[in-house]
Length: 97
Image 1 (cartoon, rainbow, N blue to C red):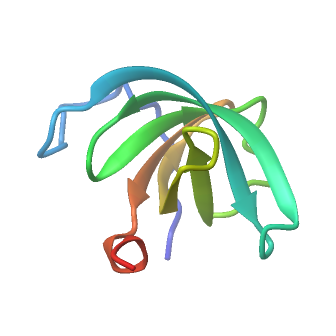
Image 2: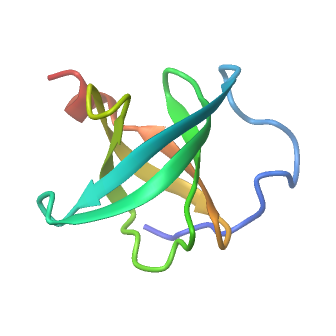
């Protein structure tokens, strides 16, 4: 699978759902929960979110995000990224359980 790296502000809007602005602290977890990165959720919809991190270096293409002090957990796949921002889609199959 090829990674597309582009600015979220380039080109026409392609989302089917409108995202709601947010400013939530969250945690990205991967490596079976042994690796955790602090992040901020900037906007969110039922299908995805815009996430800000200090650096995307070392963040895998698939991970879990924990929001609301761990009460909400979503499996994610990175759709695009810049140096500090990531657009992610929520993985429906993994989130259904």
